[in-house]
Length: 472
Image 1: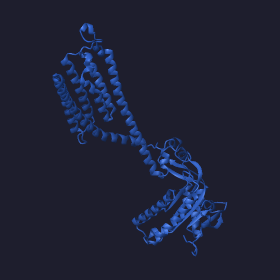
Image 2 (image 1 turned 30 degrees about the vertical axis):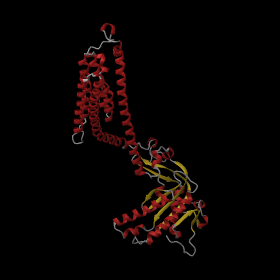
Image 3 (image 1 turned 180 degrees about the vertical axis):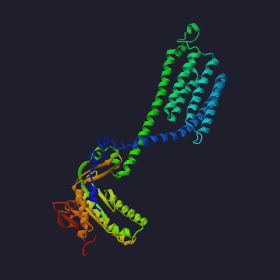
Image 4 (image 1 turned 45 degrees about the horizontal axis):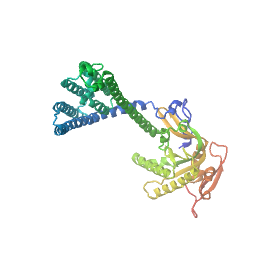
């Protein structure tokens, strides 16, 4: 395996350093498939919500009908007991309203099931709700011989805001706007059909002065406020749908990022870390881990056994890396590229990387002692510290977080050098300088490594007292 070659790959032509095109890096969720997928998800959520919303509205209709029925009966008994007056005329319209809401509610509950529901039913029930309110308003005014000015005096007229509020539960702005328009036209039509005087004259008509409160200008203001209230519910629906679409789009974007990026990096990009999107230079600790003679091990395993082996190996690496607060940048064949101090540098990055290497060595030794595998697992680990470029590389179809630079190459060469030095772990002098216990490391060589001119000091762990040299 040549992990260094993978780590050195350059961004595709036309791609900004550290990411996709500059426009794509401006928004990590701007994948070309994200918008259609988010739109489909929102549409699917709204379809599922539509049936549930209509069932809820149906139960609210039933509750409204029952409340109207109980309230009018209770009010009639109180008034009859107090002054001996009868509300028979008001009760009849109230019973019609209560029965109407109960019947419409029952019908909507019967139809609001996925197998029967059709989007057109939302308009049907909206028309029935509005029509019921308008019809009872006409009955209430006609029975009393009141002009169109008296529309606000009809008790059922006060159910209009309730109808609009309940209708907003559908989160369908078209149905809501249709209800607002139908109510406005209906109220204007009732007022015009019942001879709506511009300003009632109490002196000429023998009416009290308070009737002027129902003049056309005042009623126009009431209608305007009612329409504004309805418009507010419509804007609320639009706002809620936009928030839902934004939340779904963010979720799709996060899921897309999580497919290609490490779990430690994806949330930072999602939160708007512009430096990571553009790419940046920083100090980092790089560790390469590789399995020795993985090809020979594979020859003695069936595909299923080989899959279980690599899964178990990667699981052990992940657990060990997390314990030492690093992260696996990528698994490369039978090895792994591991980073410490990315994206946030720390004073103990090198110490944690060296501790990770020794901890992983112990984990592999314990795994071998368990005799779970037919062959002993041997690994090599190379660790170096230096400046790297880290960021997102790739295009719109695939993004990848990676680190580039000479420090990555040195760590890769150190991992390969473990074969020649007969060591499990090799670290550069720069890495050992950050160790919590430098005395636990000894210099085993000084050479430029493959492809380099400048020699570096190479260190290996000091073997335990009385132990021989470690073999890879």
